[in-house]
Amino acid sequence: MKFSRLPLIIGIVSVLVFSIAVVALIFGDWLAATFDVIGIRIATLFVAFASFVSSSLFGLLIFSHNRTVTKINDDTNRRAELFRELTFASSNYSIIELFDRMLIYDESTRYIDKLFTKNSFDFHMVESRMSAADVMKHPENFLFTSIKIPFQVIEGKVVSRIAIEKIIFERNGSRFYFAPVLPQTEAECYLLYNERTKRNNIIINLITPRSQDFFISSQINLFSKVKIEMSITSLLGVKVTGVSELFFTNPEQIEGDGTNTYKINSTNFTLSSMPQITSISTRK
Image 1 (cartoon, rainbow, N blue to C red):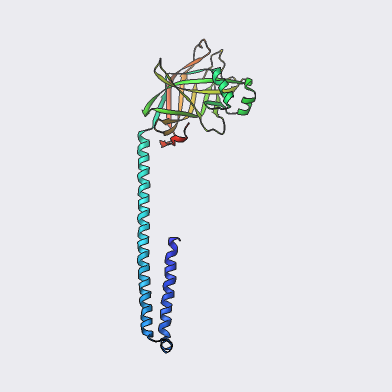
Image 2 (cartoon, rainbow, N blue to C red):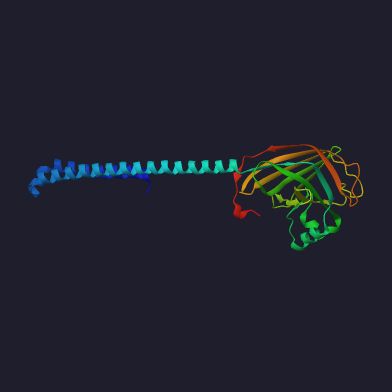
């Protein structure tokens, strides 16, 4: 029963009891002629009415007080829980910086074979106008490349996961857009630690049509800027999202295996959301 209906019910019952008592008082002579000791009965009705109203009002006040205290306690608990979460998130996030150099090279055939064996585009992004179904049906029409960039944690805790929502390459006024394969909204990066250089690296694989001149391993591919929209999750499950922009010098030569190396001259990371706790059990 809703609390808002209780005063109405009490009011109706009180009016009913009071009306019966008044009627009994008005028709007292008839009642005295028909029944004995009418005065005592009328007095009993009034006492019962007063007792009923007073006990009902008292119970209603107690009930209202308990509801108010419960709401205050629930609100206090929610505020305390929110404060604990905010305190935890603000102390356990991770912010990274991409630095030194970016490498672009042909993707390893081992990982390409794994993509088609598992029929999974994890760790892969496609050119925004492409269809994943076309890649699976006609893989010979597409190029598979990888980019690798060193990163370091400049604020916060150890990183456990980095995912990319969008990558935009700029070259001579042209832009190349890469996005995860639907229905995914993020493409997870490989996190690779190099024992020789003592550096952490992110690796993400890109798929483009052969008809597009995004990357040709036999020549220098000139890029001026890369914009990466990413999310970074710390080891304790606190996630932040932001945009990293890389400005670099184009390579003057290519490596023996066709790798293009780009020296990063400057980088900007702009935070686009405040730290928030994620569900660790559902993370990949």
